[in-house]
Length: 85
Ligand SMILES: [Zn+2]
Image (cartoon, rainbow, N blue to C red; front, side, top):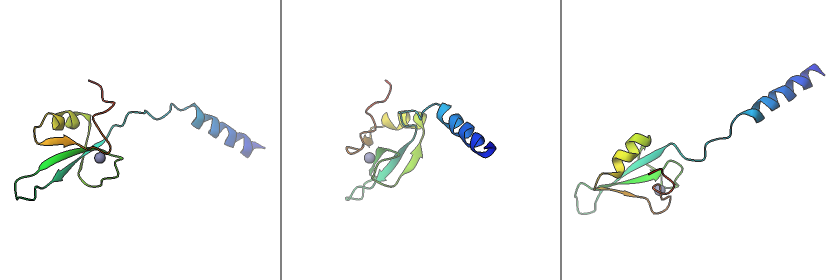
């Protein structure tokens, strides 16, 4: 019985933990080269986006990236939606 009690206690401990925050805390900046050989541009994705590639951004880096004229946001994952102003 002691083992079962320990298991229940463990389960209660897990259940008592706060849920995962809904807002994502990671994004990616993908570099997309232009076909005409220009320097290209950046596309910001949520980290969970199905479009792969790019380096990870934290919130601070995301804010900075979004201010850049050569950076756009992905139309699939729409990382700008749900952000705090
Ligand atoms: Zn995306």
